[in-house]
Length: 330
Image 1 (tube, rainbow, N blue to C red):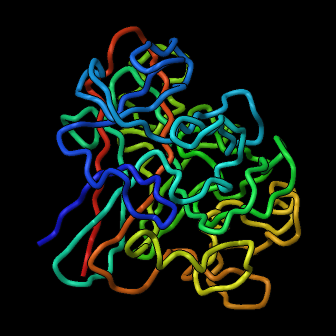
Image 2 (cartoon, rainbow, N blue to C red):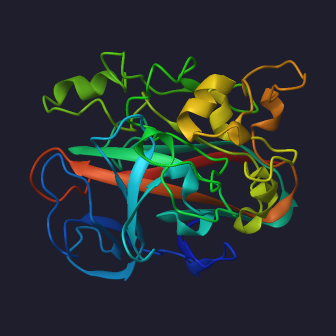
Image 3 (cartoon, rainbow, N blue to C red):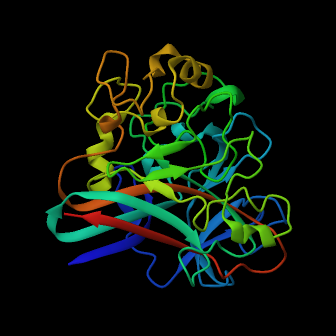
């Protein structure tokens, strides 16, 4: 009755170009498909491949974390997207995510408490071995340009309503007063700031004596929240576009880029000010927290778009490396 599939999106209407990865998975490569990624560097090519990456086929949108850019949330998108372009995460369109996640049911249902974990393929509470992973949820249907956002680039009207920062990278303390997101069932998801000694507090990462070990999604330290009830192709989130300034659903990022001054500093425009998205008070100029959770309608399918970027921390193929999704439906 209930099923979760992993997909390649790529179609502009939000439907999957590859409906299921089946027994395959995603592989991250260097400059060309099949080549290695240097230790500490992030991938330049993302493909659907077998378990050790030795055989590959369909190309995904390659969304590469930019390591040297402040203040967070910056990337380079290429691969199936086309010519590689620097862009802010919130400017990427929904159908251009690295990975699509689809929940299907024979009855129309709501979904809530959706969580994404990176793990070692043995225990969902254990971080992946020897690899650093950045994750973001992409929600943007009306993005008209691909200009950067944040201090790395110019103002853009293509600001979406998913994540503005990568989960697993240090969030800038100057712009983030609350380094967490709270979902509709009051589960709190934390991410470290650049003022913290560790981005990911999972004690199991302490044994990895490699620079960057703590800057990763994984284990119990950083679990990524996904928005409620996105609907088929994410259609129930389409009224979340910041560029439209209307709709019941308000930006996920307004829970952690919490003040209008910080929002203006980051996005470079007064059009993208939503106040404190974690405030429970419903007043003008404030984004009530219950409007930042996602969709509310029922559907037989719910689709999320995810950006993924990975860097090895040691030599060799990383096969103790998996992505796990859980949710509640009713």
